[in-house]
Image 1 (cartoon, rainbow, N blue to C red):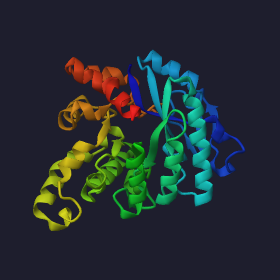
Image 2 (spheres, one colour):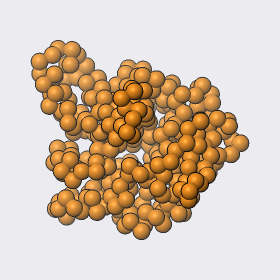
Image 3 (tube, helix red, strand yellow):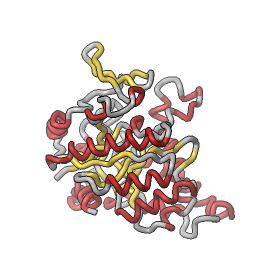
Image 4 (cartoon, one colour):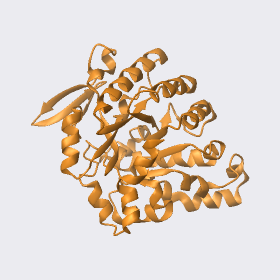
Length: 324
């Protein structure tokens, strides 16, 4: 079974009166293309189905994918909302995702209000009891705090205790830097930079050492994280502040992460598999966005891996993680 571990969805329940109006996305068409309008911004990068689960399953099957691991569009993880409102929006999504998974052809990662680690831990405990949900998707940063920050430790403790798979996805839109506002650089450059920062922060803060059974999946092949592994290693060797919370060093943490295949570069993907190991790489498409891969399984097969490693990446690793 081939599993797409990076596939986004807007559950229909989120577009009803069950959530406040300013947290309801609106879907329309313009020039024959779907457009999502949300909080004053129009999203025009959609190239596949975004809401109808049956259509999403059919489109994936046409690309040779048997099972989808759905997660929310990251902008719908309401870390900017007031806490009670955020909990409500997360609950609507999580229960909607559970309903979507009822047919067995999809699993899901839910949403948690990560601006409050204790509330996020409580919602994670709730959603892990819902049929079909196997973990949560979280943004790489919350109000300028990256995921190694000690304020998030109650959430990481709950993630380990529940066996949840935590999918880290960027969301800053280029750190609000003017240079990344042009040429779509907020996405092509800013998103992988944010994932690299939070991955490095988790590693240096010793979070994976503190919680040895924690399972974290990084979007977009880890972003730029592996390109700075040598610098992280060097800093750990020569700077005491780089070692203050980590005894094992950055490579130990980087080998603990899981990574999806959305790299858009065969040599980069091959290096990712070589460094992380075929047992820590999961097939991903980033559906339904134009920056995703339309043929994710073909991207993996083009590497010429041995049959066992290819099977692990195409679905074996995801099935193992989703089984708990």
